[in-house]
Image 1 (cartoon, each protein chain N blue to C red):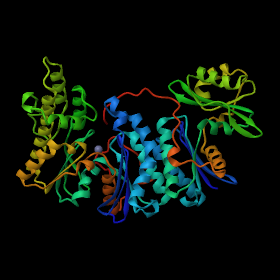
Image 2 (cartoon, rainbow over the protein chains, first blue to last red):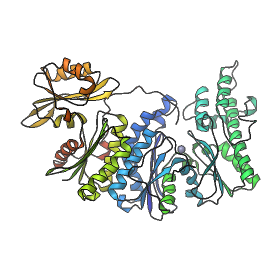
Image 3 (cartoon, rainbow over the protein chains, first blue to last red):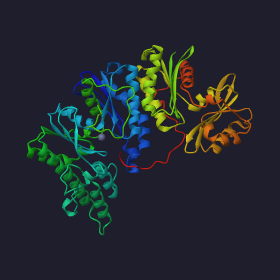
Image 4 (cartoon, protein in one colour):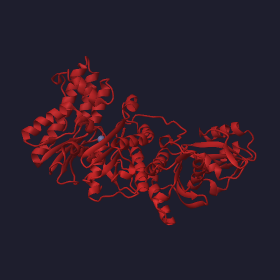
Length: 336
Length: 230
Ligand SMILES: [Zn+2]
């Protein structure tokens, strides 16, 4: 890990974020959320997200540097998310970071957003033991990853349809709840009884590690339209229980098969209390150390990008001036 | 003052460096694969050609539209990132103004192809050698934009029309602006040299803008629809 301060820039979806990490120490972490902007559309509108990024990026970066008590000449490097995500949104951060890097001569590295979610754990728990099993679960991703050593990844399974967070959003919308759907459902389900609404078990007959959430979303829609409809708190509880059970079952099966030295969880859905509790119980049963970041490091942020970048810069990785942005950026491919 | 100009509002991506002696270098390409990948290496290449280091740039000017939404954001983010790194003065330059500035005529109508059958246009007049804006930017069907220009300047005889909208919409614009003459084809695409030159004039008289105020002028509101989380 690079010892000097690294600036992280993150604009892959609907958060404009910048942060400074120095060694393993978080010096500043600024996130300008756009949730208010996309709320009335019930999901992220790419063009609106890109517009907001270009409006907010300079003030957000200024604030991150100011709170860290330094300026561009003091940096040891710059890290920017270059995928996966919304290409138009990513392009704003990548273009800005390249301008910053080329004019200042500070080294630049492109960071994979998923790897960032995993490295959020390093900021709070320190370097993790390998081989590790990682579950990245958010509004855009549901990936189960095998990490044989630092910087190497193998995708064991991923969602075949909606991401888990996306399923939360869609189910919340069907139930007439707000956006984003995860926190709304998490709150409501505390006073609901999951046992009162039957939910299917996704991919129950399959042995792999893939996920699927569209069947649960359909079950919620069907329940809402049935007469009489179930109590909405019961429905929220049942849906959340089904999503969490599906995530935990697949993860536990992979942990039993691969015997990792630790289990890492990251992404916005990792802020869900029910998921954290269930994983904690299972990890203890399996005797595997579990690392989950605090909720504020689960949702999109630039601290995790700066942290990942510090590792990659320390290994001598550098992005060229032709660095691009990719909607799909496989972790197990030749992404560097 | 040595000023870097960035222009990526249309199908053309362009970067240039100017100083008190005039143009030092310019790189311009039609339809770059993606301006995100092209702009930064082009700036570096230009500096290398001149044997200059990045710290030789003393000011930054960028074309702010109307134009391609993504193109504008990439150009602005690159320019603003560059300026932020060294605390350089920077400013935005209207794309149509830069286009008009390259034409020596008393009245210049600048029109760019805004895609999907639309054009962006504005009218400029030159008095005592100084170019002044005579209309706001308008984006719409060529007929509507021509009307907009006529409202600002009345008689189009003697006007010079310039811009890449003349490629696809030259017939309609020529008919609606009867008596106006088209500028030489070589001047139709926006160029970073003009952006840099206009920006430099502005920066020299204290016209630098706060970096966060340098924003795209989209000129058209798209119909926003929800497409889910990506
Ligand atoms: Zn994320």
